[in-house]
Length: 366
Image 1 (cartoon, rainbow, N blue to C red):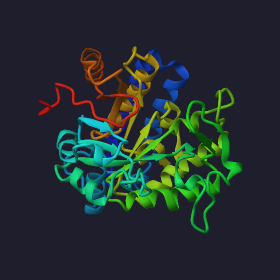
Image 2: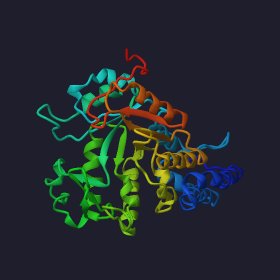
Image 3: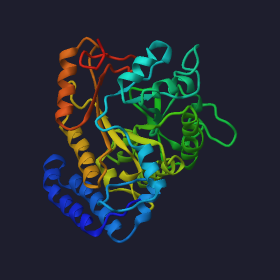
Image 4: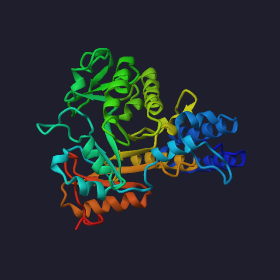
């Protein structure tokens, strides 16, 4: 890791303090303090000489001209980096139902479900060969991983190898039903659930050849006593942060993107590592459709601002909005433009995420 020299640290910290006023208007005082707290903690650690902090995260941050870093750190950073402001998509349908060549050549970041269990009679949604085809044009392919909940449709809900406890059997980790979905919120601090995710679920996805993981339902770590369902106490919250750190340690060259990451995580740590340094991007759903969610815009801007101040130029910040159909061009274009104006990377799809809307403004969508 290239160590940030003291003058740059001072600039970053001063910028963070100046940014507090902007964040306070967007998020309120408490949330803005958390966001700025991350940057100040980061700056203080580097200024104190904690270079190992970034090395533990496998991260290369911006450094002044002439600063040196190890080739290993640079390789890790380049492998993790996502394209700047990419055209991206989440598609959880089967490869047999889509033009894989067109999918891989249209989008720069593609989120699929790489679960090796059969998606249908045709086998897995995507196998290693099909994932390689998606990557042939330079796209980064991430796999969906349900981080904060467990779906009853997954094989590991009830069937796991010796040495693991299935989600159904692990009643101590169940935090209640996820309303509206056939799944349960899970205690991400539960040791058996952590073992299942880190040592069984994630390795099977990575073995398919993906470039990274998209962790869903990360908001579980922000489910306090006021949460309507799935309350996550302090041990659960820290356990969730540590589980992400475990995945980062196991897969230092893979991208990790979070769905609906709460602002509170900006000020969190796992060990000595500031949590935001462990991940490579965030996105949120239903930000601009059917109406603009000011709270989600503020949440994404807080992550974007913190990443920028910390020198994370390749940090991905996206929006995923749902059109009523793939013919709703005007609404989709409006949401797309709003996201772009806000500085985010937009994606507009239908809510089932099992088909692709080839919007007229896509290159080569013809």
